[in-house]
Image (cartoon, rainbow, N blue to C red; front, side, top):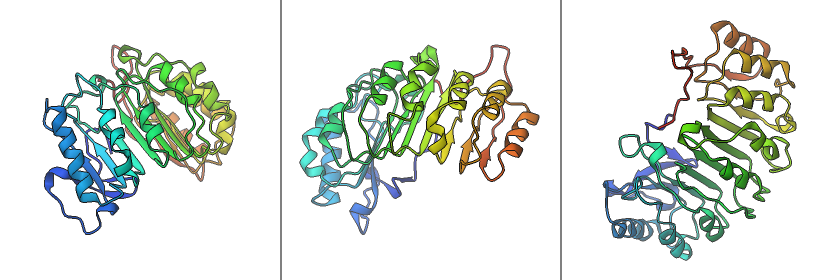
Length: 305
């Protein structure tokens, strides 16, 4: 599913839109979605969140998705509103901030602030997804509950990647970083990924996604020699500009046949090289779909603005 489509399930739960005035049989067994009108006041978000709390029961929702909070292009997510209701959100296990289409707000325009207070206020949170990275900040911290962290962006700053890599997340199994392009703030290089790729940062990690990367060839070279890869079950290098050189580097590096899946979709490999990757990794579910053709101005990631 692309960022142009809204999730129908999140954290294994069916998504229910608050605006549809739903009455699920078990309000804790769905993922509630809040999506406001463009330029709605913060009071509208407060009202919507409180409405979810009223419907979801004493522990609040198990999973919550927030799309447009009213002025995502201009002001960051109202973290303080969410944190102030932490006691009423004791059951929250999954949170997605910023699930917006490009028609609502381009991914590179979505404003954020410091998401550290959210992790600090919800120690039982297991899944955190954030779309957009403009103004995004994170102070390294320890969080024992987090299992999945997904940062979707048209350009993820190296500073944020370094902050993620220095967090103490002993139970994190799934990490997905959309590196993006330099023109939209994605100034990271492969060296910024070293703490993650070394395997020292997250001892439980089994899935790594380094997606939507303008530096996909550089990332492939780093991954080919990364100690972490030996204990991964799945690797996702999709949505970027991977070509024959990067694919050759992957195949010439450490064995990848232990993986259950390798996602290289949206790529610039030749047909011959794409088939070679599939052939040389028998038993691995290799995705080489969505082949792209390099334009006069060069290659492009799947998501940038």
